[in-house]
Image (cartoon, rainbow, N blue to C red; front, side, top):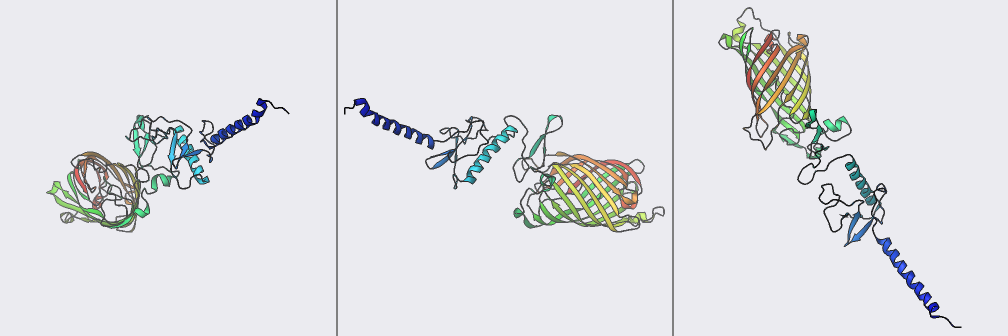
Length: 427
């Protein structure tokens, strides 16, 4: 039987074509697959990565701009949109799920305009950054404030009020026991007349004349279990305080009018943005010797042994809002159990980049209410300049306006409206 040349060659030709097709199919199966814009929710599969020099490269769904800080690439222009990943469990289900979640998170962040700063620290689109404060993350929260100004606040990222304002930035394993630590968790109220500090205030009252109020005392921590931060330490703290608060009557040759004595043991728990104070204090009032001889000015038996509870919140590093309720379990004849304090302060913290000689403004306002005065009391406001040391000690020089019942307990039923100036120092 005779066979043509074309018929003899057709089986070989068919075999060759089949071999070529098989080779092409195998090469196509081994190659990586790039995502399209419509399938980004699809999970990665084992064919979504390719190997090169024993390194694994995840194929992204977009080609980045290498001049943009939002590029998903690490800057490897040789592989374009392929990002190198080195993992020990390559190809596992957990690894594939993690890579899928990371891609989706980056897309969600771009959709919400959460801007990632470049290495220079610049924000290219001048949008407000939404990252948390010192501690868990390095940035503060910035929000568009009044009239479009950026306002920094201390709120952390979190779903609950506790996570945003009360929780500590530092971890408990970073806390340590310290004797005589530096810094104060709960500083004394700046505009209060009844705090333990060093102060000298010269005021004028139109109904009486010139008065010179002096406080000789101080307040300091003796033990802390917490951080070693100077400006706003976190943790637990025990403090001691004591002071003699006296008045010299400039209208009577600077006679000693009266002295209030105060001593206490505050116990503090504090974080960067929230502080709570409790503890015990004693206060008693004593009339001056020359005044004891005045028949028209009898001595007042005023004393208090009290438990205190104070709360303070710092919306920013320089602003503090506070309120305090004290209950006296033992009082003198002229005192009643309850007293309340509240106020606000603007006082910039110490910064290493600012010279100690640089004066910065402060503003403080304080109210003090007493049950024996039918929950009336006094309100004082101070404004001026301040200086802070590297250990966060505070020196202030400024003016004061005082209105209400006399802050000396011997004369607490006397109404005063006085204005003057003073100097204050807190350790």
